[in-house]
Image (cartoon, rainbow, N blue to C red; front, side, top):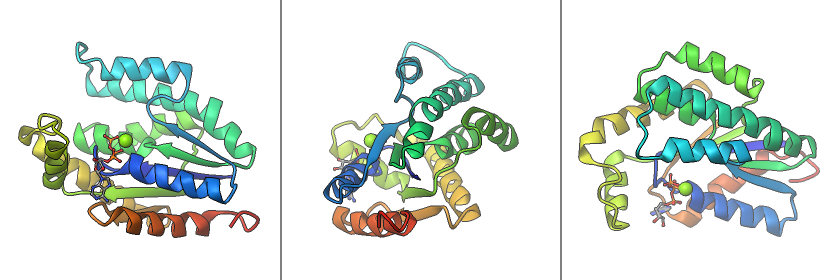
Length: 207
Ligand SMILES: Nc1ncnc2c1ncn2[C@@H]1O[C@H](COP(=O)(O)OP(=O)(O)OP(=O)(O)O)[C@@H](O)[C@H]1O
Ligand SMILES: [Mg+2]
């Protein structure tokens, strides 16, 4: 019934906030399905392994097509059926990630990406997209604190700046769909703001 995606860079707090949102949905006995990209289906899981295999070199377009394959299957097998059952669907990353990473980050043509995305998803877009916006320098510090200083290397900083600007541009173009939040805010505060936005999108019977 209501489709919610979470977007933002690595370490922005997507998993943290999805966990908190799911807890709230459970407490309210609101039927829901939680899934993620890439993955969420047997095909998606295998595609995920391919995408994350450090031994493979994958060019930007084939990379995008792999994400699209995973996404298409996820929509057909998981997201659409759950929405049809009247559930809230929470997805950790969705098509905006591709538009940001492969479009703004890797420079693929936005029209091409949107056309293939529309074909793969049947034009399904979330009702709400929570963008956890984070300065890449702070992302770098968070990664370092987690003892993974190489995860977001300084050499990649300009890529991550483009990514951030890309996400913000997507949000600016669709202010009704997007909720842009400062990912450095307190976790509990973010949880509250997200819950308010989710409630405002639930059908009257669930909110
Ligand atoms: N609001 C916050 N303020 C400070 N630190 C936070 C906040 N939210 C999450 N963190 C911390 O940041 C780190 C990354 O959080 P999390 O795993 O939720 O991010 P993510 O967006 O899911 O990352 P990934 O893209 O790698 O899956 C964790 O150590 C978490 O405890
Ligand atoms: Mg995560």
